Image (tube, rainbow, N blue to C red):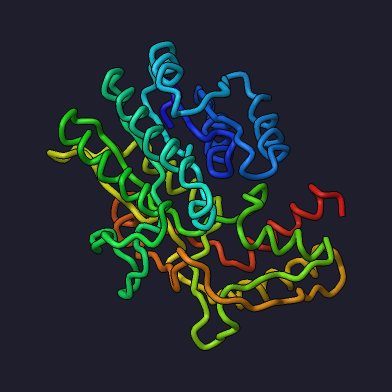
Length: 335
C-alpha cells in the first residue's frame, strides 16, 4: 500500500469499513474515518469496532452523515484524501420496504455528496460499495458484470444500481477514476447482527426459533454466495491501487465466493461450528415461512473479471469462515 496517501473511508464503524480501516492502518497508512453510528443495529458493536481503530496513531474519526453536504465538503477540504472508499449506506433489503426515506437520504443523496466532493477535490481513486442485489432475480448464473441489471427487486437494490449509474456519469463528465464493488453476502466475526447467520446464533442462545424464508422447499432452496470478510478486504485492498484509466474511468467488479451454498447447508454448517465452539450439540428450532418480498432465489458471482484485474478470487470455505464467526461470538458475548 502507498502509505504516503490519505485514505478516507465512510461507514468506518461498519462491518467492512472496520476491517478495511484496520488493514490499512496496520500497514502504516493514514486513515480518516466517517460514520453516523446509526442505530439500525446494536451500536455497542460499532463503538467496539471504533475503539479498536482508535488505538492507531494515524487514525482520525468524524461522527458525520454523508448526507450532510457541508460536513463532507469540509472533511475533503481539510484532509484532501487521495483514495476514497464509500462504504456508508443504509443496508438491508427487507428494511428498505419499511423505511424507504433513509435509503434515499444515505444511498442516493449521500453518494451524490461524495461524488461532488471528489469532483471539487480531485482524488486518485473512488471505490464504492454496490451490491449483488442489483442482479434482482436474474435467472442466468453465475452473475456476470456485463449482465443486464434493470430489474431491481427492492428499493435497496435500486439505490445501489443508481450509485453505479451516478458514478459512471461523474467518471464520464469529470474523469473521476471510480470502481464499484458488488458484494455477495459478506459474513464473519464482528459482523452485522441483521444478517441471518448472526441472528440465528442470537436466537439460539435466547431459546427462540429461527425463521427460514424458503417455504420449507428443500428442492428449490435459496442459494447464497456467502463471502468471508477477509476475502472481501483482500479484494478491495488489491483494487485500491488499480484505478481505471479508460476513456470513461469507471469499472464494476463482483466480489463473491463463486460457489453458492444452499441456505439449509449453510444453517447445518453453522450448527456444527457452534457445537464445536461451545462443546455441546446445537440444533436450531426451525420455522419455515414464505419467501419475503425483495428476496431473490439465488446469488452466484462470476469472479473472472476480478481475477483478471488483480489475480485474486475469494477462497474461504463456509466451514472455516463460520467457525471463526462462532468462536468470536462465544468469546465476545461471554457464553
